[in-house]
Amino acid sequence: MTLPAGWHARRPTLDDVPTILAVVHAADTFAIGHPDFSADDVRGALTAPNVDPGRDSWVVTDPDGTLVAWAILDNATGAGREFVDVFVEPDRGAAVRAPLLTRQLERVAGRAAERGLPALTVRCPAYPPERRWAEALVDAGFGFVKRYQVMSRSLAGVPGEPPPPPPGVTVRPLRPGDESELRDFHRVYDTAFRDTPDYEPLTYDGWRARIGTDPAWDEWFVAEVDGQPAGVLQSSDQALDRNEGWVKNLAVLPGQRRRGVGAALLSHAFARYAEKGRESAGLGVDLANPTAPLSLYRSVGLCEVRWVDLYELVVPAAGV
Image 1 (tube, rainbow, N blue to C red):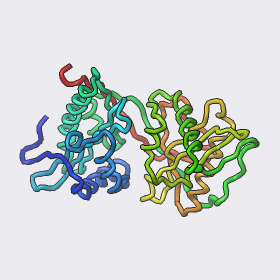
Image 2: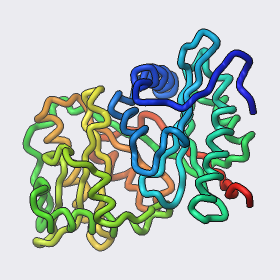
Image 3: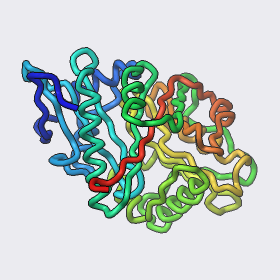
Image 4: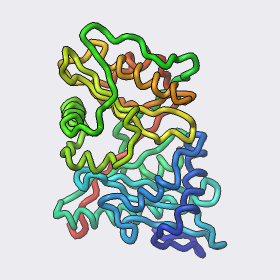
């Protein structure tokens, strides 16, 4: 598919970060009601492992020279599925979203060939207001694969001290300076998620590199049962622009579930967020996960606020 007459596509550079961010903010506001990206997020996407902006990303300008669209590939592990995002300024950029998707799928085919694979699976998200985008994905051959539910709760009235955990359960902040502790954290996370259908394992070294060097360690927690690691909670700063604490991952070992470990971890995270003056707490739930504990999340005050659907396509390698 080609761009409309007078429109121009080129590869982005880091100098484009401010104008890309304006496009993403407009797209997010249309899709979910508020901006959900920062300049650091844009910069991070363009400099992420396994991403070459000179090959894996596009921006589009309209006939006036205004940047109105940005497409980016993502594959943090360098293995498994590819993810494609195509952000457009809702009013002016809608006409170029499908052509950009076509270009990105061609790049996925090339990446499959480079990796010596017969095909790669690619996924794209679509939010409820993005009906035209969901239709474009279906027209391109994508099929619905699953839904993520976003949940949130107010932290008004949440005390700085969490309630006592169940007998035998203790919760404490992660000790980030202890290498063995970090390895235990990764082990619990990896073991707990292996029974989910879409989990792509990551080695400790890969996980350590992925989480970066300066997370908010005091918002990460470890739960023990009778002195042994049983569950972990990882926070993220992705919602700080809304003054919201965000639970990125909650993992409880299979043999320790339904003992109050998850609720105790969440209570400690909420207390820490409230202590820092956050107004709310949130997380995302993969509804295809057979262990997705919606009842647990509701029991600690979280409520469904929005959802996003994921669509999937298997792209044959270039030349296959």
